[in-house]
Amino acid sequence: MLALTELGSTTVLSLLCSGLALLALARDQPRLAATFMLALAGSGLISTILKALFSYARPMDAIVRVHEPGFPSGHMLSGTVVYGLLAALLLSSQVRRGARALGITLLLLVIVGIGLSRLYLGVHWPSDLLGSLGLALILLASLLFFLHYNHSIRWVDTLHVPLSANALSMGGKSVLILAVGATVLLMSQTETIPNKPHSATHLLDIHALRTFFPPELPRWSEDLVGGKMEPISLVFVGDEEELLNAFTRAGWARADSPTPLRVVKEGLAALRNLPDPTGPATPAFFSDRPQDLTFEKPDTGSPSIQRRHHTRLWQTSYCLAPSCRPVWVATASFDMGIEISPSLHLPTHHIDPAIDHERALIVTDLTRVGAKQEGSVHVAQPLRGMNAAGDPFWTDGRAIVLSMACRQFR
Image 1 (cartoon, helix red, strand yellow):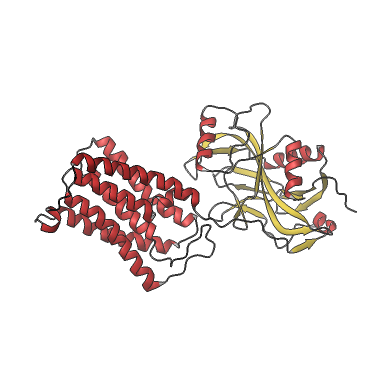
Image 2: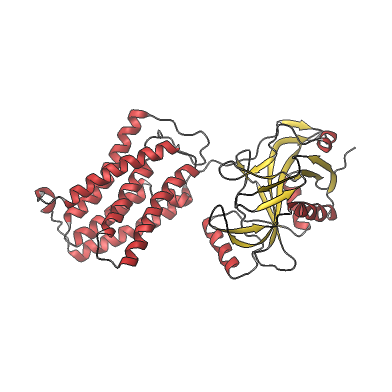
């Protein structure tokens, strides 16, 4: 999402338009060069003026730092204009039909991706993006009118740059390469707001935790848009180091973060049916937060990434008296293979519907290395449900309480 959002940033679009303008001048097309520069200047000017006029507040749960007003979205406005202009030029070009269709599709996906990235990063409301898209289409239509205007525009059409076509072409290509480099650099340097676990504000004693699930906590994990998924099936007591040590001793590995390159690597391992013991897991949410920790373990019968045990953990705002040891909640499931999700229409893991079996495996593994089973608590009624990918599951609705490492309670 950071990469997609940077494709609509002022720096990247400035380099992109400058490079394309130089290439247009190298081909003796000053009108086209002027159109690209007007696209950049016009979208930037409209965005600046409207932000100053409206001063519209952004959402409060952004995960990257921004300081300007929210409407319009400069990324969405400028990105739609520039990539839309490229798509329009490709549509009317003499490029082969298949290549033309592929190029236009990719450009439209970039526009959609920029909008989705701004939503995902929490810096815009949907209305910001829809309004920006409307403004962008008006500006794009004006630019295409300017580009294809039949009469001569003297100050544009007679523009001459005192450089050779080869120099202009080399300069344009170099600037386009800089645009790619700028995307990577800006993505890596974006200031993000850390998604820290909840601080402990509620104190529990072990007798209460053995008796009931903390009443202020949600009882379900959620998908990206807040839909209910699996209920909480495990409750852990212990700090992060104790959890890491216990799972490691039990033969589990901490999953890597789902960065773009890491997800590609996992996908290649899945295609080749190879092991990937620390492959990323899809984010799931609890109280609007993605998991703090993910652990996984290869299937003994088939070490491929296609089949794995895994669990997602979230640190809660509860801690256990008297020393305020953190309380965590978790869900768990077993990946049986790769499928095209019936709800997402994307490749994803297919889970074993008997998710209580995975809960039992984790309890067995952790108690074998010293964790103590404190009891079980009622979370939900026995039920059948579906996860974000549309896979069914069933459960008895209970959560097992485990305390990590060697502290005994009375």
